[in-house]
Every structure is written in C-alpha cells, then in structure tokens.
Image (cartoon, rainbow, N blue to C red; front, side):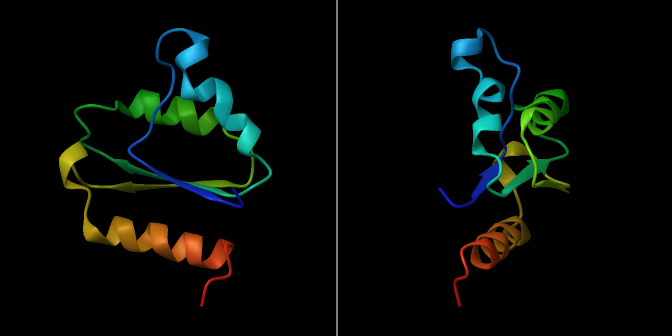
Length: 90
C-alpha cells in the first residue's frame, strides 16, 4: 500500500504473533492515519496509543468524541481526505 488509514485500531494484545503493534512498523515510510474514539469501550486508549507508538513516521492520529460503534461522519471525511491527498486522487 502507498498509505493506510486505520479506524478504531489498537495493539499490545496477547502474543507477538497476533499483535498488530508487532507489524505496524513495516508500513513506514508510507503515511499512516489513525482514527480513534475517546469513549471506545472495545479498544482502550492505551491499546490505541501502543499501536500508534509502534508505527513509524510519517504518522498522525485524530481523536473523536465517540464510542466504538458511533464514530462520527467527520471521521470518515478525515480518512477520505487523507487518502485522497496521499494517493493523489482528484
């Protein structure tokens, strides 16, 4: 991939073989955007921050006041805007 946008993702789960934090660094130097919910009842803030810390640069994270099931439409717009810019889509 030339870029990635992840919504409601986390790391630090169980054994290294199944932990996304073990693999996310391989995405670098391709751009990464993570979208997270401040009141996510499934993916803890710590898990989100663990995955973000494991990712290489360039990376960005955007937090939205929401639950896991109710990420707002502006989050999708942020994801689309990021991918449009990174993939040079008109």
